[in-house]
Length: 138
Image 1 (tube, rainbow, N blue to C red):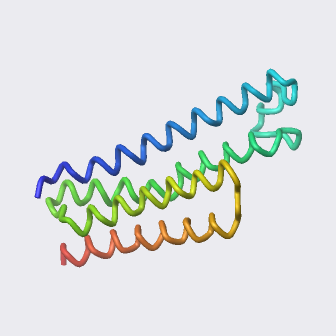
Image 2 (cartoon, helix red, strand yellow):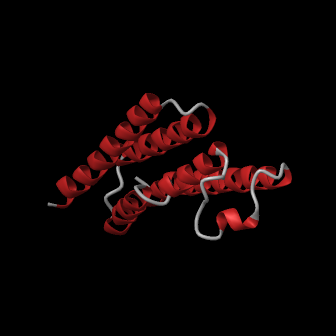
């Protein structure tokens, strides 16, 4: 199997992160134009006066900089050890799909139970991706 195939889900995850960052910027600028926030509201993070939809987008962006770090690391480990196989690719794409769905729920209708289910699915897929790697290495 072509080892560089593991880079595709990594690229997709990075693209998701950049798209959510664009949503953060769009929502912040829209709130500023509507005079709901000022620059001072973001000087030390986010003040309590930042509208929920703006804070929510930023929280989703931060989510994409936390757990996915372990995803990038394991994908790079698959690549450098030459252990990329169909099972690993399926798990990697499953993780990305779970993160995309999690972001869509978080950003557009924010049902906590749906978010939790998708977050948990992503975590389990990531654990399986790590477990498969170590099973193949040792």
